[in-house]
Length: 433
Image (cartoon, one colour):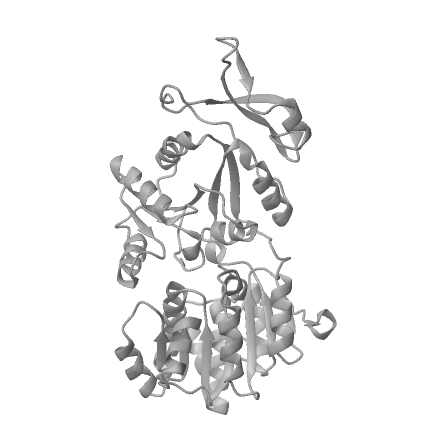
């Protein structure tokens, strides 16, 4: 597949002029406050306007929606037919629709948003209005196809946005089902933050000699995000989070691994007087929308989310991202911290790791090709009685990380402390070495 993807290089441009965009759309962009294109927009727009298939690889927060949205609207005005944008989450679908409507309002763009958790009746009415662009999550689009509410015969342009996340969430079978009912004569654009082999296979199966537009190697983090790592015990996470929120006074996005964890952290923040909301798959669409809008407006200073929302949160001005729990996949680390420093702004990302999670940290470091700077724990409230303290041991390093080990009183020798990792365990690679 790699020899079938043409590498496309295009000089960075300082304005949207010269990219092949129609004058009317240029006027709309200028009135909407878009002064200059991002690198992914500079490279993808000229290629997409020509009707070519694209595989676009770019970090989150780099303007991919306009990179496919502008060419889609321009080409649909020329060739007629419909556009289809498929995304992994409801939040992303709503945000993409909002962005398309913003630039398409003056040209009377009609869209239909087909997402789960919302009533089918309004979606049927939107379909009946013959929308120019359909924005959908895979499951709900298949629901409408099976109920024969919609036909995709007129679709001329298809976009798979956040394709790697869709694969992570198990949507590959649904994507294949959708492609089986799409017209063969179409333009296909695939955008992703990472480039796993499954994406290459998807491109090979559904695209025609796609041009690859890549801003940075897969797994690269945004340069304007500063990163920091703390080694903590589980009982130290909550007081450390409170301490961080005393230092960073702006909005904060906190990621947990589980829905239960998100609720627990949200309650802990509220207990110390920090306005917070939770967002995860157990919340209804209205609850998730209220939490996101409250976070945008400042009603909630902190938003606690699971990875299902890591790419569905497009909020500018997030000052701090906290990985309260390490993500289940190193790729999710990139997407999480990409929620800050969006559209050229700066931001800070802090990660909490427990001593036994050194392998997960090393996997993240290998992916992003840099070491996470290790910070000393600030002074925290005294640990509850009977809980082990975290004692730094300045010794050799395991990869980029100093040796850390939990300690506890020895049952054999009261008053002395011994490592919970035996020498035999250390020989097997356990602990920080």
